[in-house]
Image (cartoon, rainbow, N blue to C red):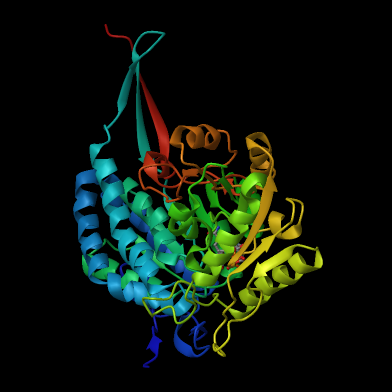
Length: 484
Ligand code: NAD
């Protein structure tokens, strides 16, 4: 296979020579071989990218001042260029992080253009301002202004979809963006930059500068940044929140999770298994909202354990580029070590492992871990409390709905969750009481029209929906005097 190597950054509307010769090597988690490289950003490169975004935002006739319809025309061209690269984007993501290709085609190939169009349309349809009759005479004219230059820091697990949860609304709102992709998934970010260039996005509106944690921290703290939007670990989110607190800089944080799937006693297990896979083990267990705690009624506990165990055992493990693969490798050796550490911890603490626990037979290369299920543990076990970020599920029994709810809510996190029942109203009533940002009934899917995000250690702020657009806007009020 030919190596995919980029030599320049996308800064100020074109390809820019890096300040240093340092590179980020990209490895395949499937073959453990090198597949490409990109330049590694230094603080000088970040300075240049922020200056470009700053100039583009502050230009008195520039992007931020355009009518939403004008921006929508350019963003439509961007969506078309992204679509033209959708298959290659999916392939690159799958090669870099192990995401099964059928999922990469939906999430990474398909979702970005959908988000660009959705947020453009929201902006076009939004009233220019809201004029409110005053209580003290006169009126107040309330409008929304783009928040400014956005520093966007994204992780490796769903890199393009997460990038566009930020780029879509930020660009539609009139912001300009400096994007720092994660080191593990950089090739897709450069392909996206090619789409931006081909679409003729004005210079400086989007800039792509990959690097590690230090470079991310430098970007977050940069004086030229007006707003930070971050997705990743709770540990990094805490540090970023501290920096933004000190600087009084607005920040959106999408962090970790330990969500619960509550299976009620009238659940149709047979009919639920495919959707339950989507809610619990998608992307090799590497999604923040996955429902990795499965809460099962005592009356049907054995049946649930058997069904979930059978589900885990039915999943084809292998090359993520093979369309039949349901479980690919974890992103890196480090991530596999971490997941294997949690599996050992689960056993040490006395949980009963019903399947998995090791590396799959016949796959000597690649960071594979078998889908693993633990039963007979309570919610205090380490594996029930901490985010594992791998294909490891814990099945916890409950006596009644009240106890199920109390177990679901007994978590440091509050991002996703789901309730499964043959009675939709019963499930929806319970879902309403789950303390988290989002809860599904008989499935879990993030719909672009509704806000997505977490409470507690899962973060703050929301993405998607009109609320996700508002996250990139400042409210602005003009007081008009009484007539006469
Ligand atoms: P991470 O949070 O360390 O990295 C995510 C992104 O943030 C990367 O681009 C990284 O370079 C950057 N970053 C890290 N520390 C930073 C800092 N202090 N300032 C600015 N940028 C910083 O995540 P990771 O190390 O790749 O994964 C570790 C764990 O994070 C996973 O096991 C999982 O629990 C969690 N995670 C969550 C999500 C999510 O979508 N919520 C995504 C990836 C990882």
